[in-house]
Image: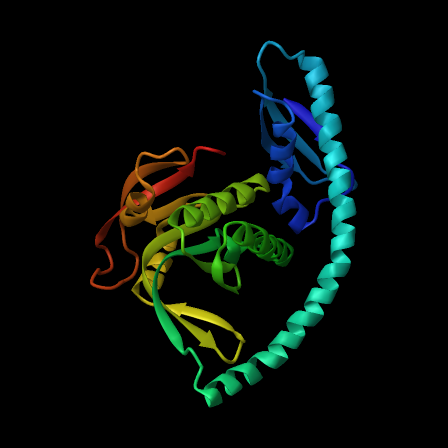
Amino acid sequence: MLSVKLPGRLDSQELATLPSLISEVERAFPQCSIRITKYTPLSENDVVQLSVESPPAYDPAELAKQVRELTVKLRIEQQRYLSEKAERERLEEKLTGLMHDVFPLLVENLKRSGDYPGSKIQAMSIMFIDVSGFSTMDEEDRIRAIDLLRSLGRAILKSERGMYLNTWGDAVVAAFDDPASALRCGCKFAQHFNLVGLDARVGISWGTIRISVNEIKGTYDIDGAAVNLGARIESLAEPGTVLCTEEMGELVGRENEEFVFTPKTLHLKKNVGNLKEGDGMELLEVRSKLN
């Protein structure tokens, strides 16, 4: 086990990218496996515990030294990049504010010209996420959980091409064209939350949904049976786990190189579609082979 003291404190966004940073370290050492086992926030410098497995060709002491040095170096580069990025984000916020002002005008102009798309129907994978135990947290922990959820939402959903993002309180809902991307995203959320001592519950369904423009918020909304089903599945997930429908397993293939599926029979807590409260549902618990 290798302990690495990271320069400075990690904010929510930096913490969300920590597994990616360690993956970059791992790539520098062929045939080695480097995994995060524990993350500890301290007053001045955060500490990460790494599990390092290597073939006999590596000298353990020298490998530990090189892994520690490269981790610190990449963290310093990350700090430099983020400080430069902050200014870009400030400008992006101004552009976003402008978009919120302009969006209603664009909708109105499209309606007048007859080009307004209204809504469309599409088959997609739907992912619901919430933070387990959120209602029992104190105010400080709630703020921390929400900040982490939103920063992960920006980072992970973008990397997995999640679409039509909505957030409220401790919940996130997103849609994906690619079922594998939805499962990958859900597993990443669960992994990142577990890293900081929190648990996410994730439910993923697949089906036909309606995508429409929300003229008040200047965003997209999604609704339909698959959306309702995803919400019900998320409520059945145990803390720290990802659940999906059997259809999702069939879409990516039960025998695949990325996910492990474990069949579960769970009973609904609320009605959904033709199913009643208490009815059993055949679901799959999902785990990433890559974590």
